[in-house]
Length: 259
Image 1: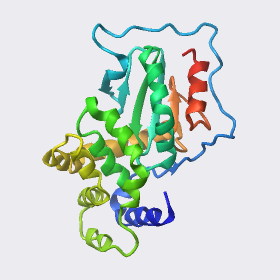
Image 2 (image 1 turned 30 degrees about the horizontal axis):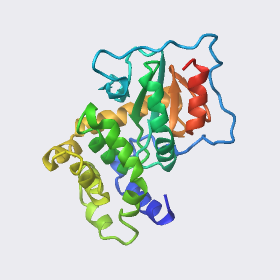
Image 3 (image 1 turned 90 degrees about the vertical axis):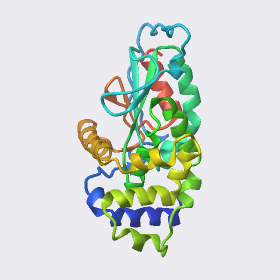
């Protein structure tokens, strides 16, 4: 994010004190880098066999919400399970999506690999974007996620800057109201409306305190379980891929696992 946009995000983070205090605030790109050592599984002696999708279906179109709160694409019984913890406002996550999402789908299509995305909250803006991104359910989840990443820079640049009256306005709101106001001000509400989510449905998702609480609590538990240093963080067959944040690194790990 550029400096001006980043200042706006930071100020909103300070304002939403009650909620931000409960979010595990890691960093975008924390601990990942193209030139760092990559910790990946050793190559298997035998490549994993492909698995055909049920008749009339494709694995890339098979999407369901998991018990861990993420959304998984592909064969639920795939022997190679890739999980990404990603932030919708993180530029490193957007870079991975823009370069890796399409080639990753080729691995998912084989039935060897499943891919699960779990929203990881770096700031209050992430929470509103996540609630809206999940609002339409499993079917449109990945297209909406991909398009949010494609337009990430534009969305964040259109957000409030220092001196915007928005910041004074939200001070008197409750944390849930602040999250909804931020999502609308940054344009995420209009974004999902343009993709088939009615305004009534979108606002209901934004004010779903139970869903917001569940996201925050899952973040806390998973951050502790995996010691997540930042986003994106990738988990392959329940093991953290250390210093892995780009598509070539993830692909190397998948091949090492037999994909």
